[in-house]
Amino acid sequence: GENVGLHLPTLSVQEGDNSIINCAYSNSASDYFIWYKQESGKGPQFIIDIRSNMDKRQGQRVTVLLNKTVKHLSLQIAATQPGDSAVYFCAENWDNYGQNFVFGPGTRLSVLP
Amino acid sequence: KAGVTQTPRYLIKTRGQQVTLSCSPISGHRSVSWYQQTPGQGLQFLFEYFSETQRNKGNFPGRFSGRQFSNSRSEMNVSTLELGDSALYLCASSLAGAMNTEAFFGQGTRLTVV
Image (cartoon, rainbow over all chains, first blue to last red; front, top):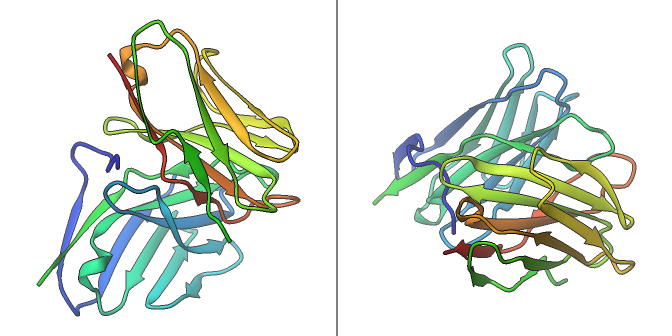
């Protein structure tokens, strides 16, 4: 698959550690956010979403935090596994009636054995 | 439940030709969005179709067009292909009625223009 940017920021973590992937979003009017995971040769896979009326949302092994004051989103992955190695994108949307998401540049997560 | 299906997976075309890509959304989903993914520009929104109507459009030239059928399947067309159109084209489907919702992607069609 197209794993995006020629110079993607990379985060390397030890297997079993927690990972934190950060994203600065662009529009203060954005009210809906999604984190995606993209593995080589595949399309982006939905991980978790959050709306602007929330600060935190938890899923299975993942937590998304939203700080609207500084337009910052983070994805926390607990007990990172080798299968978590991928490129992670945040996506924002400010159109209540549309599905036109603006994607961040992505972060490559590399899990070390 | 079947996921989003895109066909074909790979295409090689010559400059100046045109190409049509197809996307079948998840059953029950009425919104289909198209994105272009390149190493240099990342993921960029092309357009969205909902109930056979284009609801949103990104910042791409008119050579890029699309349509949606009554069964929600969508096609996108690129005419007069340029080398820079080489990319992974992704479609995403969602329920997306009255508010923005989760969007699920297909595997993409990799287009190479030579």
